[in-house]
Figure (cartoon, rainbow, N blue to C red):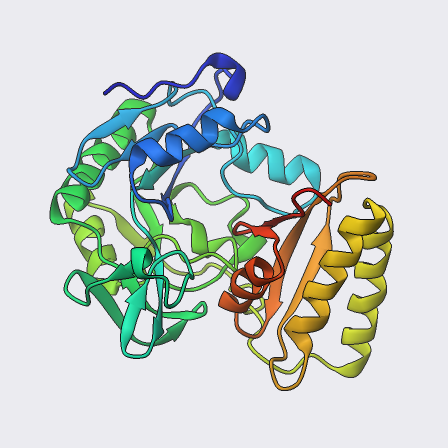
Length: 314
């Protein structure tokens, strides 16, 4: 099946490419992710999808662009970064939650349809970005990724370089970096690609990439320790955003925030970009257990994605 986005779903104007970013879909298949992009009117997507059988789908020309990062940098830097990176999504369910000795996809613990076998799961050995277990990429997917990156480096002139610390968060210090990166390097709340050093080493060797140091490490993603003053400031900021939303929808989002920080949960998100008098709002994960955002949100009847909350029928 050919997966090709309509030109209305991306920016067809060609841009110079000096970078490649590796993502994974947090979805069942390349087709399901493509269908989501096709229904979305915000020009979100990447040029390439690699399906579970290793099939590479070019969903729009590699010199075109769409929003792939979801950054909160200043607009000029954010747009320039988006335009110069070619995105590649690997079809994968991403982080898996563990409950009662079983693994579940899409943060839906104890939902039978989402249960996944431990065979084929990657164990990071400790919690990384809120997950210890991840859906392992198929060998054919990694082979296709290596072939595609090498082709793009040759055809577009992307430097064969990669930050040497594969699992680190660098943030805006990568603003001018040219080469191959992972989404998690510029977003502290993202888990893509797979946090497996062996995976990265295969890509580096297969694509003949040069790991480079000397990149200033950004402040790490928070895992604990927001001060009371910081929490108060965050509260005031979130209130301003909630007040811009539809009253009923904002009230439900406020309920989510209260549940996230209740008791010893200590989980905080920062709201931004509300739809005026609307039912949707974007957020950045700051601290605590990231999986709680989706789990508690869904329990409250909200639709929660990696960086957006929607209140259906509010």
